[in-house]
Amino acid sequence: MGFGERFIGLVFGIISNNWYSVMLNGQPYGFFKLTRGVKQGDPISPTLFIIAAEALSRGLNALHLNLHFCGFGLPKWSPKINHLAYADDSIIFSSSDETSLQLIMAVLSDYEAASGQLINKAKSVVYLHHNAPINVVNKVVRISGIDRQDFPFTYLGCPIYYAKRKMNHYQGLITKVMNKLQTWKGKLLSVGGSTMGGTSRHWSSWTNLCLPSDEGGIGFRSLHDVSKALFCKLWWNFRTKPSLWSSFVSQKYCKKLNPIIVPWRDGSHIWRRMLECRDIVEHQIGWHPRMGSSLFWYENWTGLGALYFITPPDLVIDESVNNVHEVVRQDTWDVDKLVELLPEEIVEHIVDNIRPPAASDIVDKPFWMLETRESFSVKSDWDFLRRRKDPAMAYKKMWVHGLPFKISFFLWKVWKAKLPLDDWMRRLGYFMPSKSTRVCTYFLTNSGFSMAGLTLHQAIIKCWTAKVIHRLQPILQALPAIIVWELWKRRNSQKYGEMVTIN
Image (cartoon, rainbow, N blue to C red; front, side, top):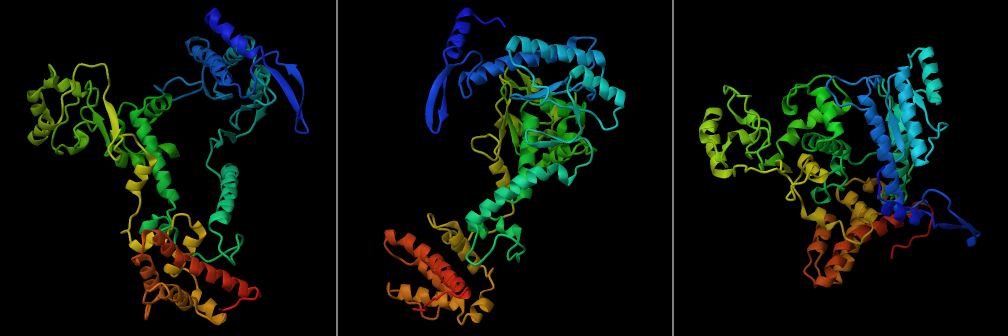
């Protein structure tokens, strides 16, 4: 591959002097010498693998220069793609043409000979459409030496299929998420006397739970809002980060139109969800003019929005002007040209507030207007999209740093009347809110606070707002949650037959 002798010597010295010892019953036993390759976990291993994998990738890409190679069918004008790779997990796309298959296998054979890495055909699979003729299937299997399997399959944890989406395609992912949720709920949300399995009553809507804690929620993030924010990130990457993926999507769905004016049409689920987020994201993308490479009409380089949308409907768009640098003359704005193209107020804004781009080899830089660091973040986008309510002091106070989440969560449920306390406590001979008030009264009266005639909410607020020395404030903030939690545990103990005193 053209590496110098010194580099080759350094690499050889690293991989040729490795010794292994086998652990038996917790003790190292014997040594043996590594004869080829790099050891697992060796820092140089990823580097050497990437170098070798780059050779394989270039060999496959070079097939497009061979007139006898017929690649996988892709949309017109889209970039040539014949493989995707992540570490050692690769997908190669090809037509069923015999010569093309033979050329691919020749590249793989050359890679094996050069790198010393052998492709495990027993773990490799060929996928074809279910309607592929049997003679085509047999030809592909014969040339590749790899057996066929049916769609769908999983690549990097995601199901790959070509027909309609089905629930069973995602069953593996669903099972993993549910297992994680069960562990998480048992650790954070379990309440004394409750069970994890079976059905239960939903005492609060998911919409309310997904509000931030200081707005009356639990701080969960709505899956709908998070999903939308992630698709917004896809649109940001599509518009601001040139890549093989963005080039392919642009050629497939936009053709010769600018993405911000592409009309809605049939497309993949991903593309449709991206279009749903288009207006949200585009209005928050700004461009810093450097060399004037921003699109004059379609990108927000003025800070007012894309000129295509903010100009009057009756204004004729002069599409002969493509980039911002075309309205600059000798490092100053070409005011006469701007006046021909735009209304007077927009021209004044540009001349007075926008620094004209200068001769430079640095392309215009996009920035995210919702972040001070100007880089897109899912968090800032989610915060921009989410539903809001006015913050309240009570909701801020009930979440105490250092107090177990489930205890503060229980106080939240008591505060919002999300537990059937009246019925349950009357069956046991006492009413929990009044009991809580009496306990709060006991503690606070002995601390010098008057609690006469206060409801549970008022008693809790008085506890939170009591003027005490700084060191006692966290204690009084946590006290109401601890009281109601301890009473709840006493209620459960009494329900299941354990002895509980009322002292």
